[in-house]
Image (cartoon, rainbow, N blue to C red; front, side):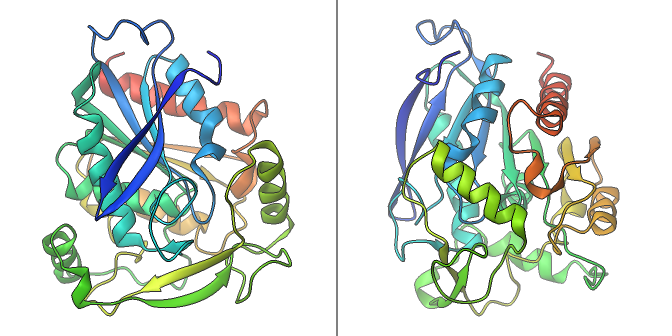
Length: 309
């Protein structure tokens, strides 16, 4: 399938227009009489939806529709502050992407999966718990924490999140902006979130391959809430839909520690699959490499098992 085999789409989320692409399986773009499963995909921390084009293309070639979009404040989507990272608004963005794609012809509304990678893997897990339209969750290089992470013995925090995730009036809890840098490039100010040469190499390579509005400067939006939507160990144990974790065994990121990711996976009380791949946090991103092939194959097999494709 060629890279042009998608249509540009947009939908409204919390007053902002979010934009992306709707990919169709090869051979069905002009024949929408048969509904197909759909994967809702969004990018991770401070990257662009376009950087996941290879994955979206390969999923479509395997017979799935894909809605791939830029989070609010990033890429082609609207929203301010620009490059403002807000977990709660991203979770609501997944919600509204699902609502939008359910209105499109040729989409099976009973077969919806959500995909997240790195930081967005957390949002994918949360929406997989919160939204009963979701039938499956895929988390690539999931963010579950590290050896210092304390796992909750009470449901109190998560119960508050479940109650307030969709309806809480955010105008009553204004956000404070924390300036950070995505990686160790000499662009922007603030502490580096994703350290190491691999992160610099990844962003440099993707910026060249996919020119677009990207910034190493990011603003983490922090709100004073009773519980936070960025607590990585929280959602896994509440998942009740089939879930795939694709873990990089040599992940360099402190919040993606191997043992903690395995512990979160063990907590999932639903049909689940775990694929562990050598290749580092960014190694799974490069098409025509063995880590990429292992990751995409695992995801396609998982979706076929869930949706019977």
